[in-house]
Length: 128
Image 1 (cartoon, helix red, strand yellow):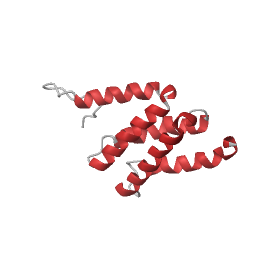
Image 2 (cartoon, one colour):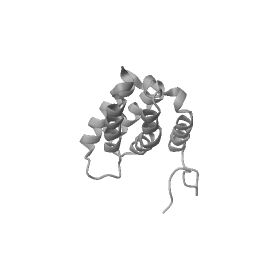
Image 3 (cartoon, rainbow, N blue to C red):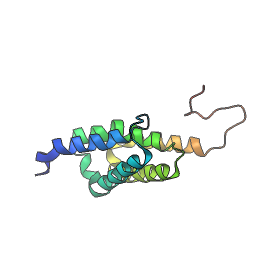
Image 4 (cartoon, rainbow, N blue to C red):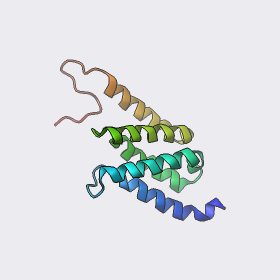
C-alpha cells in the first residue's frame, strides 16, 4: 500500500527539493540539474497522486514552487530550461492544487516578457 511508504517519500522529496535552493551554495548547478531531472520524473509519473497526500503536497506547494520559480530566473540556460520544464510538468500533474501558483507564475512570465516601460522597473523585480 502506498500510504505505508509516505514517510520515506516525504523525506526523499524533501531532500530533492532542498537541493534546488538557489541560495544554498553547497550544491552545484550540475547537482541541481540532476535534482530537477528527478523531480520532473516524479511529477511525470505520479504528479496527480502527490496532491492526495497533504505532507507531499505541502512540500511541493511551499518550498518546491518557491525554489522552482527562483531557478526559472537563472542565467544558466540548462537550469532555466529544466526548471521551466519541471514547472510545466508540475502544473500538468497537480493542476487542482496549484491554482494560486499558476496565477503567480503566469504573472511572473508576463512581467518578464513585457518590454520595460520608460522610467519604470518591472513589478516582480526588487529595486536596490
